Image (cartoon, rainbow, N blue to C red; front, side, top):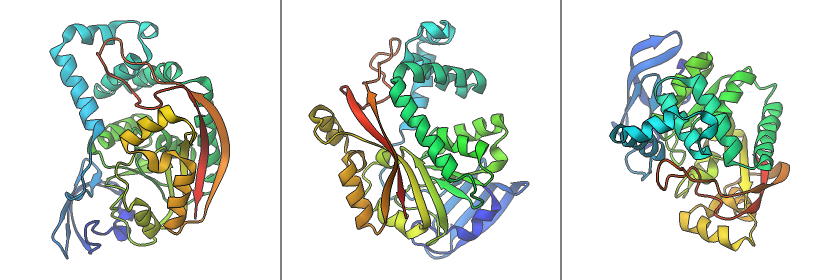
Length: 332
């Protein structure tokens, strides 16, 4: 993480001041440090350039850790499956298996081959309409931010698909965040491979309890991230506390009358941000002024499962064919 972040960070647990002891720098990147709250004595380490500001009281399920570490362990125990996954010509693998191959390639540091595998996987996992709508939202947000010079905080970045695009296209610092240190370590290796690490900072925190001071974030983005935050609770109150400018959130909304997908959405606890009226009501109640921009509709199908890893799948939704509304939610 960059040193310029230090003045705008505080203890996410009690909002107290932080005391910094830095042991390793790389230019203006803080690579290793010990950070402690002077009020509640909470400790937050900086490791491998990633600021870890997680609090122990919020429950969270690190799916990135479970999927990636579980995949590597499974393949180690089943060498025949590993050979099939890694040695079969890419075009002959099922789309889900193309994606799982990419995860293994990234673990091995073969990011160029991994990108090729992800591109092939996406073409088989998603309809052309789905991918076109998604790409259009990227283009819209990038154009809207094209003259920005202030740091942009991207929350729930995951595999940093959009944050990577921002770092490559925009002339401003990008702060990549997720609650999974594992996925952020993967993101760092990718950014170093692409020559973009110097443009970015990486922070691990829960979006429901961030380490930013009041009003310190002028621009926040998220790429389908709001809907993936489990048990959002007071998430929007927290975002309202720290955002002084605007939130640009790439969103997908399901039809309210789609009963089959509604049942699955509710069982997964994801209804808060996957329905337009509910999402707008929540944001308005938290004190945001909201508009929907670049609205598009595209057909979506259930993503096919793996043929090599029994029962493994990429996306839990949709469970039935539907038409999804894509947009960029702009909240001030």
